[in-house]
Image (cartoon, rainbow, N blue to C red; front, side, top):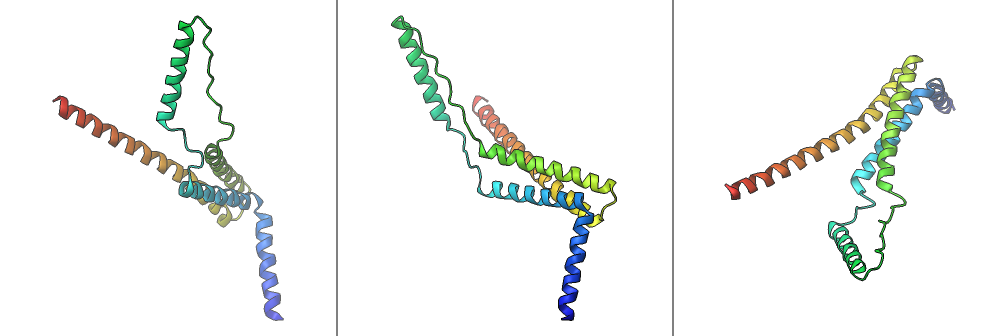
Length: 162
């Protein structure tokens, strides 16, 4: 009986902590969700891969061929508009996670102004900052990899052209 009473008291205290730290607790929630979204998207994505280069080139060449044939026949060439992508899940996940991370940092700032609990405030800063840091790290790795590939191509070309 006494242990049940103490457990209920602890639960009530933790709920009171969340109620008194609304901004920081919501920031922790936004930051944790955004970090989970980034981790999930990085692990299992991309969900909408871009079209392959050979398909794009083949479509452009066939459209040019149809335009030339129509011009030689004296007909008006038909303009072919590219298909619009209706829904881009990758962009939605990336933009949503960055937006939620910024929102987590903003709510942590407001929680700091309201002198809320340091644990909640630091948790919101940690989760929101970790999400943005992961995005920055992935962008940096991509840029360094592109630079290495470009320099290696230039090295091979310079080697053969001497």
